[in-house]
Length: 568
Image (cartoon, rainbow, N blue to C red; front, side, top):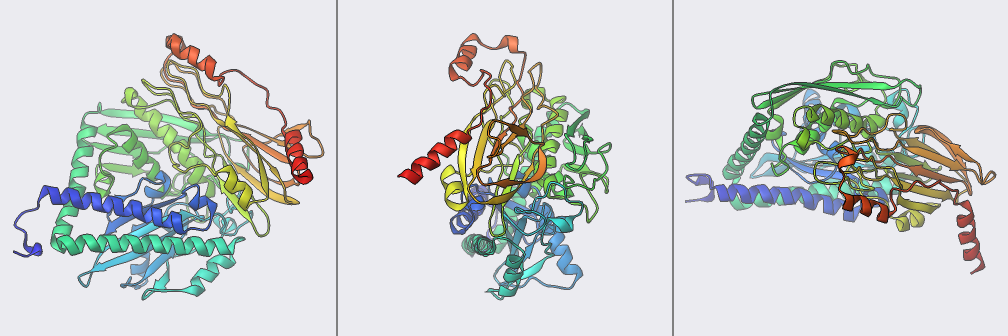
């Protein structure tokens, strides 16, 4: 009997196929990382990869960036609909590139590449990669402006167009992307790295089909998706039915002082979940709007966090969930609202407000709030651009303290190593340490944030900060204390002892010798502080992380270091 005529679907084969696809998506990410040019992808791993079947259903994703991964299914669906509407077929050997947030589902920096996969002379799936390109044009180096009023100010907008045709790279499309960036060589290198990642996904999926046959492959996919759905419904059925509400706030829009409200109600009924954002503020003329793909990303991330993380993440997990956000609001804006910061900051607050709603239903499964900001830093000039997010304190949770200095919730990147920063950019790192006393007290304390500082070595640079939690502290849970709010200080070379406090959202100019120091929020504490174990309290004192210290200027140490180097 041939492999295409198997009488029954072997559950062992289903599991083998599931794991093969999962590792294929992980391997795609390894290829992208190894082939990339920019430190943001090679060092911070700010990229994500996934595989889809021929219907555009998510079948496997790597453990990459939550805000990327939750939006990729929306991006695939929208892209295929866009092409179909225009009568454009995706043939074997093609590859599409798109970054329009209202199609691809995040923001302009995230460039998505989609590769149709063919086997046995028919379409069998898609490989997709999304990567944060450090600069795609726009008002400021790094492209994420603190004061954009429309998406056109945030960089080049690409609808779905073919970057490859008949396996030939379309250099004219690549050159258009590069011509709109301050760092064209890195853009081309990162684009080609994504191409390589998708090609590896294509090969691996074709190998699975070649081994087991297309009928078995398709039957296995259906089984895999159904099993994820069943397991998630079983988890939801254990939760107490009811409607639970929460609200939280962004500090401001970056262009005004008024806080911005996010409100959510979740309804748990039998084995399903509905999420309703009625009451969330209307969209704003500032870059903190989040396209609907970003909103969905937070829902899927939080749902995975409060249920069973061993459930394979695929289209089956989406079936029990419905999400409503009225068009024209902060979490489902109308084009051409600016959205660069919604992807990175509003997504974090959305995760916070969702977790606070779930805490009313299943408090033992939900930690205190983490730092709640990606603390985006963009620095650059005419021909260079640097981007990174900075870790925060994780919230304490039942049975364990929060983790110090870590990327949380909607981001899953690494830091940029000091060596990479100083090698690739005209900056010198001056501080990188845990922020003492920033974690909220509790039976299980919140994690500490970070202190990260650098001095500029170039003549001048444009700096954009896009962060939050400077006004509203990360809340504690079940009697725990809030974490500390974020702070920023600029030490001008001309005024060494005078620190200039900066808002969380600002664009300004640094000059040679100026130093910027950023302090990120700590996580909230969990449980009453009076219940903390005495041995843990002794450990807190011994670690030194919970004694308040005054932040000094480090310009003197920077000057002495550079003087020593010149003398050597």
